[in-house]
Image (cartoon, rainbow, N blue to C red; front, side, top):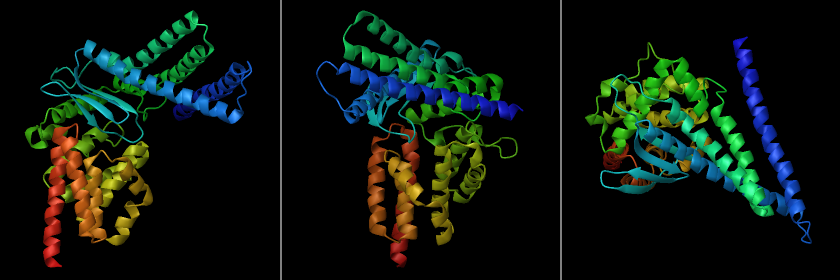
Length: 379
């Protein structure tokens, strides 16, 4: 019964979002045509293009405001600024000033990362930090209503009306806790409130990212705190944080066999994860097979067209070049292309926003380059 109610709630949120989207298209299209009724003809194709352009622009503005809301409310509750990402542009705090970097995560258009207050017990203030994004969406809605109240210009009113509708849609989809597996702000709030242990995973994520951004490497951190307990912990979107850190620590030691145990655990429980984590598991399975037994049929099982598409989208991630390099040298025996991947990966590492993570990935690239030299001597 509980599962049925969850599905009904999820369906209701989806239907509401879809209904709002359809309302935007129908009302907006009608308004565009009415707006040009004073002697200027505008066909339906042009109307649709202008409408979608307007929706896209207001969506970008809301995403920028949303992430800014996390920053503001985080700072107000004791957090320290790490980075602010909009699209692939990252503003990152450094020891001396601010740096502008390039970085992106498939499926996301923005992200704000802050270091939580040090309390020593894995707990932190999380309510206002999570609510900040939605509250700033609502603030932008209020601003849009105020602009519409004082202007008579049709096009200005239309733009800010779209801003209101898009804002309502984002506030609902981000603020409503539609699923325990969800990764929205509303889902994070509910999960942290109902399951205090999940708050510790969120704390761990922000804490480790802060250390990596400060330039600390995995060797300089207390790694035992981050080891995933296969006997006591489940695989889900929250524990993926700890699983990822465990795998990174094993990569740092070049313990690929040990890392494979954890990657297989993720892959075998991928039904509990979102799309990015599922694809990431396939990518790492491909890599570990390549540097391990290198069975062609197993490599082909994981290194699919979908995997290649994912790696292409991860062009600002050093790990994408690491996997491509391994594929070229072990599967295709193409050392020239593999070294090109090495060069692109090294260049990406030099510009990466999180220095500690870049050191790990650059080390793996160097490890593969050494293997190329060994294989070249054998051949």
